[in-house]
Length: 376
Image 1 (tube, rainbow, N blue to C red):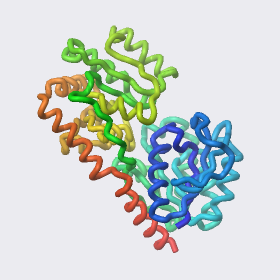
Image 2: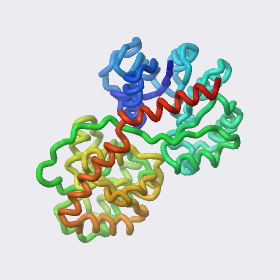
Image 3: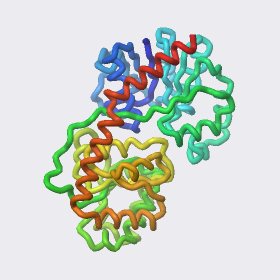
Image 4: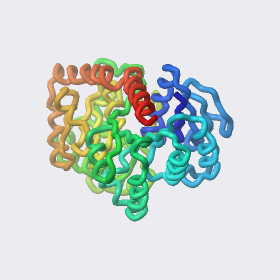
């Protein structure tokens, strides 16, 4: 099958989870003999890729366009429109990015099959921003032909969000994000004495709840443990978090690491005692599977779709209030060595069984085949 991915950011860019998860997916699709074409941009690739030329790679035929802003780039739109005609299925990775509106309209006109991945954009919390524009775009989506459009979501929670904004009965497939299993980084006999946060500095991440939780945990305050915050903190929310750390006199217990990529990010996961995801809401959260793949348990908020952490005993799924997080952090610090080590070993096994892209690609292959057959 000929499959086109127009996506604003792609590996070696790590600007958001899809940049990596789509790279892993396209690489496996090529291995099982699909013809993959990707139109993307060179934003945030740090000059690791030669722009504005077609490249034949192990993840498809790819062009990284040098543009100022992918959301308003005429070049990005032109190259994608030109490629749509050559492909059977077009996979769109955002509901509200302006170029995608044009791509979908053109696909409808040309009778092309479309798979749309909202990537969390149907979340009620996300719909608050630019609400009038998003209401207009959602009206457009409800006019699309049901036979040639399929929506892809990563969890039941995201499916429910999408159903609340779609008025017509479109086919919706739940396929989680998968990852290419990384090499297990050696953390020695015991992991280091730090908790870990990895992600964007954005209000939806509720980092302030985590900071306040640590200030309420006497076990944490009296221990040698610290919190490492990985992510670009150079924005207004990052300044707010830095001020909060100072107000709570936690500057000696909290480290702002900045952004990490590749092996450096894998190593900081592997050496962490536990990764904490305090977000108000997440449609999937790649951080969870990235952490578990390095044998590091996770505390995730109930705003994420990770209730299975409790069931599989590889972490905790809890309310994201500061009191709840403080109590859970204390529980982790009180774990005996045997129970904690079992939790670590179970973490990687869980990922190998459920989130390995080498297995997950066959779910995508089935969905693509059925979709193509049913739309004929």
